[in-house]
Length: 365
Image (cartoon, rainbow, N blue to C red):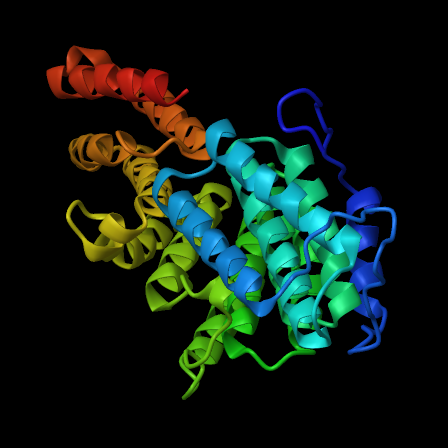
């Protein structure tokens, strides 16, 4: 997987969903796999718990980078170097014990999940799938259904984003079935929330609402947030509300009769976290920019142009530090929808925001 030179085409339809169902429906071996030392790599280092500590810390810092700047080719190159390093460690098979082996493989799978997210954020959808497919293979080997379910959830989210709602719904269902084989209620809540987004894209109001309610119940179960896996440390009630708000906005796009009510409900969920100066926007600027752009677009749909300008103006500050191409695309949609309104550019506030959005898009591209 060459980040810079190869164009990897994304698969869809049966070619994609069959991979998910094959993974979800086959039993996962637990503790039966053991790396074999590769004599053809005589100078390979022996992996110790201390080395794993360093690798895990590096992955945490990469996740922090992604939370703040989002996915772009620069951050993706860094992630890919770590991916290559971990692949070489696994290939060498030189580890001090089975527990260290498990940590090594889990670190590699976690990095696949994160690198896939960075590639998705960079709009390199085929590359994202390659990372995630590799992560699925690793989690199947190590018997980690929760991390596998999380990766399936991202495959579902990417399919939703690309307008492949039927694929997204199948991937989301596979993720739910996979998550049920583990014990983490947070992972179950997260993948169910992803499934709600897929159902919203299909226009299935009832199925979307049921999934949102189920995810909310899972997340608020006593003890659900305790000891959650580090790769979903970022998922909490705030992120759930943002994802749910996004689902309601997606429903509004497919249901004109109820769109105003859906947008109002979404606004209640989104506003506390996307508003300028919130703790969430400080800690997760990429996500605040993405969901905030959707929120600003929803005001345009309702012809609340003053509120759209107010929200859009607050996004400009966030965009200065975020380099996510997914966010750039959403800002571009916002600018296009705003300026297409009748006599929009004759309004000086809209014209000024449009110029600022153009500049922000150009700077982040």
